[in-house]
Amino acid sequence: MTADSSRGALLAAERRAALDRLAALGRDFSAIVEAAGQANADDEHDPEGATIAFERQHIAALIDQATRQLAAVDAAIGRLESGQYGRCERCGQPIAAARLAARPTATTCIGCASRRSG
Image 1 (tube, helix red, strand yellow):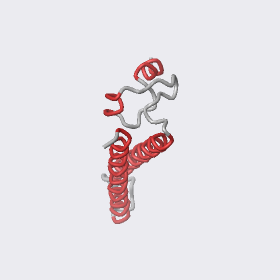
Image 2 (tube, rainbow, N blue to C red):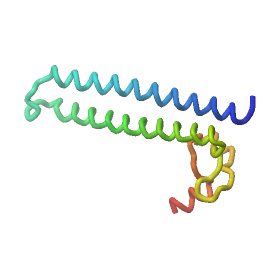
Image 3 (cartoon, rainbow, N blue to C red):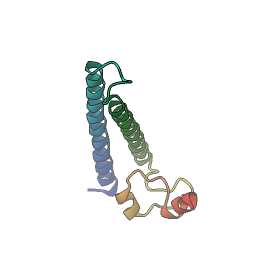
Image 4 (tube, one colour):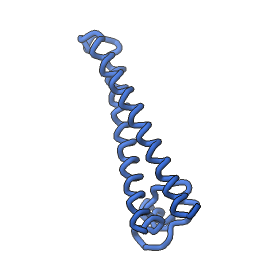
């Protein structure tokens, strides 16, 4: 197996995991919305009203996070297909294999990432 095919397999697995997570979160969100529709319509006096709203917002935030992760994976797959995967977008140097193994969607080397956050 070549390095590109193993990277492609890793990114494909990341993509499947993100899609599975989005599907599960979508089901959770639908269940919360459905439960809220069946619950007491008087949120002001419903002790569960605030909890349901919090859960709905929490799931919505997780959906947003999973959507962003899926976009990052798709961008990484695009970089792999164009031959740019594993190159820092800031300095053009190779991104360390250990960084890519830990974070397959990384777009910067450790040095550039440290300068950006520092």
